[in-house]
Image 1 (tube, rainbow, N blue to C red):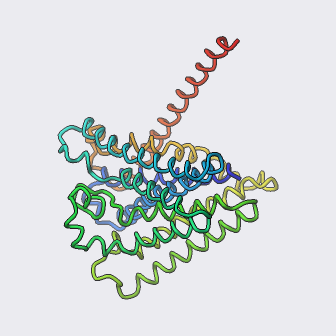
Image 2 (image 1 turned 120 degrees about the vertical axis):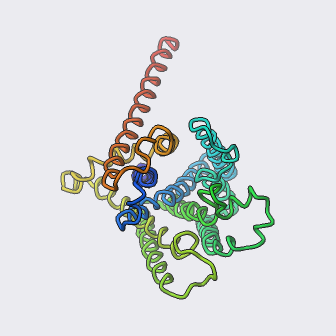
Length: 369
């Protein structure tokens, strides 16, 4: 069962990688006069699903890892491991900004502390680990994490407009609400995606047996569908908050995005189940799925590497010749070519790592003999 879960999670993470590349190439390389078109708007909305999908999957993975660690070493070790991993991701976010400053000199030193997705992801992972450890049962953990996700989403318009935030140190404000160029992401509402993913991961990890697992996934798909319907319904009603932007701080847009993520991931789970069924070994579904499932999973497993190297290539000096100079169709072609380049980089990395492992084993064998 675990292999199937990891497979569809890797597929979803690979999809998030492609959406991330699409969003960044669209933003960095498309001509300014093409940005008012409907096609550009739709492509921007599509690329905007990359970040919430990454955060949600990080939460799912954190909960699955916590369950495995608990089985081996106990719940306290799981909480410690989750907090440690979250802090590592947070530090990686700082190192990423340092790399950007070194490779693209000329920026202000204060940009080292700009809040990006890795900073938010790391802190949210620490919070999710602590909440996971605060409950003792899977039901309690799922409810606690879901409540925290709801609280982050529902209070985002209030927190962003609160005068109390003005009294906090400025570097703390950067993590709470947008602050010009210093915040690409904030904890409100982005941490809610990771917390919701952790709640999902708790339910998935607690499901035992094929029948129970499929019932859990069916319930998650139904929940995602309900969130989409609820989001669209509330968006058509009178606003609950005096100051809220649908595309940035509105809980309705959060519900719609979260619901779409859940439905897409459950569809990938269903696709995986369908393609591994022995009775369907040669049907048309497997013919269409098999060619792309391994490359997509490979991209998913290398998501951090691709994030680390592609941003500088897209926004740095390496692509300055066509910065904001491509028509929309040209950006689409460039996106496909650049995605292929990133996949080639992953294949090269894996090949080098494989040869190193083979060399290590070859050296170890004579020594053991």
